[in-house]
Image 1: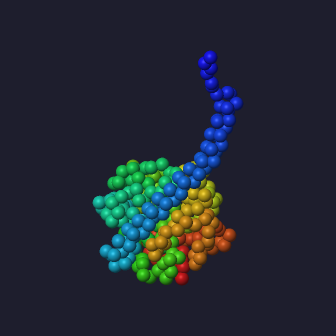
Image 2: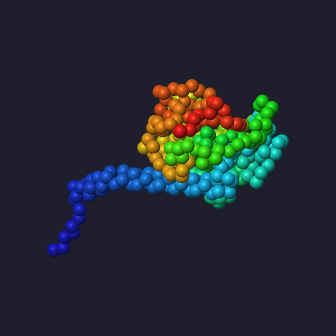
Image 3: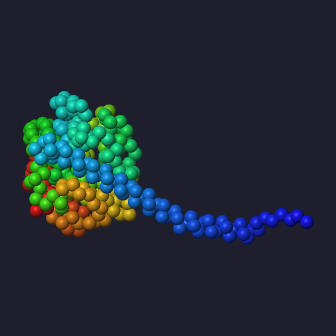
Amino acid sequence: MNTKRAFTLIELLVVIAIIAILAAILFPVFAQAKAAAKVTKTVSNQKQLATGFALYQGDNDDTFQMRGTMNGNGASWASGACNGTYGCLGWDTVMYPYLKNVQIFESDFDRIPKGLWLPFGEAKRSFRVAGNVVRGWAGFNTWDGQDYGWTGTSATSVARPGDTILLTEQRDAAILTAGSWPGFWSWEGHVWDAHSPNTLSNDDPAAYGTETNAQRRYASGVDFANANRAVYTFVDGHVKTYAKGYIFPGYERRKNTGSAVDNTLKGVCLDADPFRPAASDCALPQ
């Protein structure tokens, strides 16, 4: 007599339980592998940016480019400061011809939505330069009526290039800030937000102050989105990850040029006057 054999309910439940256990073991491993891949990509992008800085310096007497070409108080258009091929020239748009790829300026950990970044279209700028290395805005300052000109930082003048921060994982807040005229955030605002003033974490109240918009908080300090770590590039071109709150040696512990030294801060100052070297600039490691 023929009999048909089928799985019992207990056997099916055992198989399902085994699959669930395997999934519980493997999914965290997959998540860790995905995060590791994102870190590798971020490190690679910053390393390529470091190469771009070196290429630019090779063509410009070993000098870093300006942080941005802009005049104060919205006068950039009338003065011609924003009439270049790439609009208001920032450090990244100046370096773009050496890289030819806007995705190098992005991190997969960047949680800010993409915005219009003229003339490159949809893009992010996930990294910002240290303001006391890539200095200033060139042009006429309409706030105080003076033209300070611009003097770039010589790479060879940096006393400790291996300890001096060049890039941080601080996001571009400009795409979230609407100005008083169309295109502000993709032109002048983009230049204004080109530098990182400190290494404070974006979830530190000292960094975001009274800001209540969650997305803007991502841009208020360094974004330690990967297991409380972030990627940094240094003047000598090496790239490394550091934990949130790490105190980089040789730097002052203050929020920006306008604040006093506070040794309780969990971050160091990278800020500088936007138009010319000043006594209030945050010092580089010596």
